Amino acid sequence: MVHGGISLYTGQLSRLGIPKQTLRDGSQVLVRIIADKGGGRYEGSVAGARVSITSKQPLATGTTFTTSITSKNGQILLTPNLGELNNVSQQTFELAVMQNEQLASFIQSFGLPADETSFHLMQQMKQLGMKMDSTLLSKIYNLSVKFKGKEKRASELISILAKKGIDFSEEDLLALLEELDSNPDEQGDHKKSDSQQYKLLNKINSIKNTWQLLPYEILSAMGPLAKGSLGFFIDEAVNLKLLNLECKWLRNNHKYLFSLEYEKGLCRNIKMSGEGPDLSKLAALLDQRLLAMGKEICIELVDAELIEGTACGQEEFFAFGGEV
Image (cartoon, rainbow, N blue to C red; front, side, top):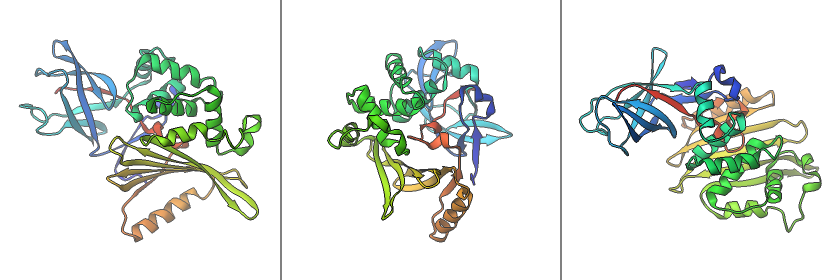
């Protein structure tokens, strides 16, 4: 149910556990010139990733321009938008997802091991617009790996706390992980008293930027039916960008994930994943209802690892080649 999308991150990246990503024709990618390496070679940033760029014409450090993504003959091309570079004709460039070796080298350049937790941490920091600082990355990584089985979720939450400037203890973080967990049976001896519950969560939600996180339960006269969490990602301009919903039905342990992408206040895309047998039927029904309401919203069935937690698994890192 992907309409006009360009699928990237195939099985060639399986060694790092990197899932498939989706780009669309017409998507915009920001290019920034970071440094002049001489001989027409430059270090640049494309979608947050540092890459090498070759140019026939001189480019000043700090120059920025946007490019449009299109597909042609199986290639992914970047086309600089007209008018953004003085006296430069419109060119096209090939955009390629970093290969295993490139990603491993990129991750290791920050002093991190080339593993799934490191990559997920960098995806989270990219989503939050945080500087890729080696010291901070190592600090977050070393703390995240202490939470066995929850390393990726821990890296997300620690990054959010760092972005918001919130101090915390390991005990606070463990409580937060349990409060947001959709499995109530795993809280065990670490469950806090009512006066201590949601201590760190309340601090996160008191600062109105990036992520707001809300755990919830669905109750009936017979007891709890479902448990999960809502997440709202707010950008620097206080615009809603993502709404994430995780829900686990307690009777059958089926878990469902939804990630709604917003642009200028309107939902443009809904990504769905789940363990139940009726997810495709639900997607088709939702698509029909939305079309009947006159709303053209793309609905996609995706792997859970793309949209679980903060959905930072959708963040891409690119290698960029061509001439400006």
